[in-house]
Image (cartoon, rainbow, N blue to C red; front, side):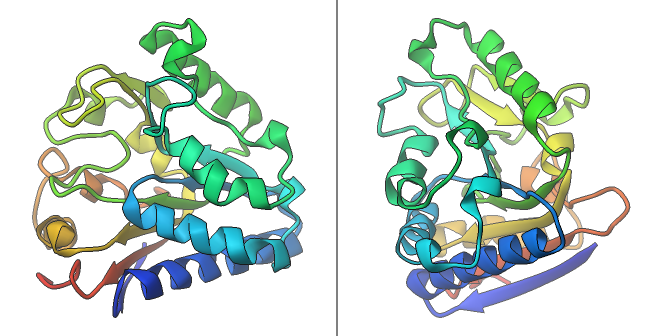
Length: 245
């Protein structure tokens, strides 16, 4: 595993750097003949990244019709809810590039008529049927408690190894019902990019990068990339998020 930490002056410079590296990474993957899958995340820093992408992605050397888009987790709310990670990404980013709608894979919404467990199973089936098997880039935020996607400290979902997607019926932060990729699915990534901004994330970032600690207490420690150690793992931080390192 190749790990590096990059620290930027503020959230805006962090977002610009991540967006630029994503465009370069996708173009490079396509140049070698791949049709890359990317996993987007949610949260305030993701909104900034998506905003930069929305402004600059149309001019990038990326064939957006050959990019698969997924999310690491989704809030199980109505399709038009502002809490949906997918809705924010669509508005700020995806609606500005010529993506193939069949390659943009959202988890089912709460008004789909499906029970939460069935919706998670459906998203897992879509991943198995339409995914490439390996994510080119996995973008993850980290919560102040060390959670990633919707895998929270002490939750049983951390131990799930027989599925790519799990239902989370009892999130400790609202909304309580969520759908999340599992650790084995998250780790099927050539590049794992953690993005964190603000003093509120600093303690969790320090715990995630510490020499010692448990995945149960800090789930971010469980995302290390491919089992053979070939993945690039990068922590993109602003100075505030890096202040406890």
